[in-house]
Length: 244
Image (cartoon, rainbow, N blue to C red; front, side):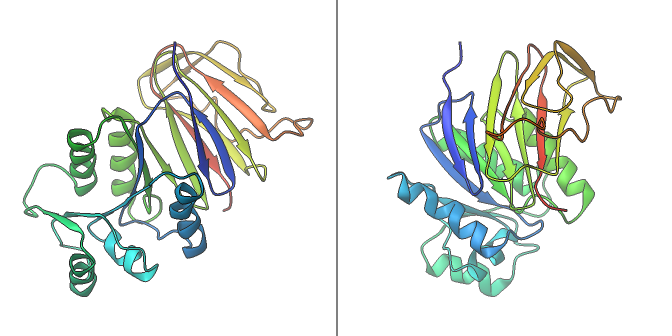
């Protein structure tokens, strides 16, 4: 039995199979989110009376400075961030976690470890994760899928959620996504069930080398713009393409 959490993202209302004590936003070094979207992401928690602190991961500090959103934490080796942005974050009071460029873990993986070690039951929203280099995106998506704390990737163009053994996810969209794809992050994902999609799955078996569940859309009569995905075993990515 999983307790669900209501998560509000710009344009999305999500019922997640987790109960976090705190949501945090980690800003990576990929494609910068649109400033309006990023600001809405940060301010949403203030509307809910909660706190959604921002953590900058190396070059992500450039994005924070450009949006005038000071990070609470700055994590990385400093090899891709602007020196002036790094100093700006320090002056704004960011807690700095500096690492040598000669390390085994990526800055994103280090940020997730710091979150897991210092926060009780956090939910990490990774933005500025899409775009940029394929190896960085592939690594970030895989690390987030296997992390010991719940994570998701999001910007105004794309969103990636994760389901683990026995979990379900419900998403309500302001606008119908251009595509909804299910991506296995384990060799196989069993008993996958969807509701509200055009091509429904019922106890489907999705394997890593198949394209069975790519580019689905909402059902034509789905006026609520809501869909649900559940899984019995495995790690399944639920990917939404909002704009191309």
